[in-house]
Length: 64
Image 1 (cartoon, rainbow, N blue to C red):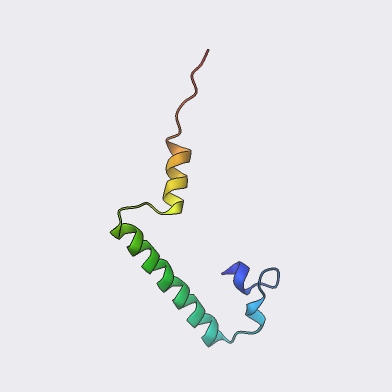
Image 2 (image 1 turned 135 degrees about the horizontal axis):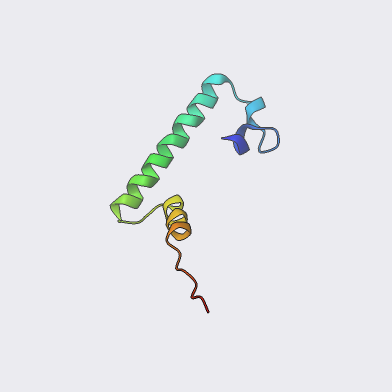
C-alpha cells in the first residue's frame, strides 16, 4: 500500500479518509485472495513461490 498511499507514489493517502483507506485495503485483500484462489484452481504457483523456488533450487554449476 506504500506506493499507492505515500507522497512518493500515487499520493492517495492525502485524499482518502480513514474509512476509504480501510475500504481500499479490504478491496486489495479481496483481490489478492481471489487471485490466489484462481491460481490454485488452475494448479499454478504464485509469482513469489516461483521466484523462491528458482532461487532455492537453481542447478549447481559444473566445476572444472
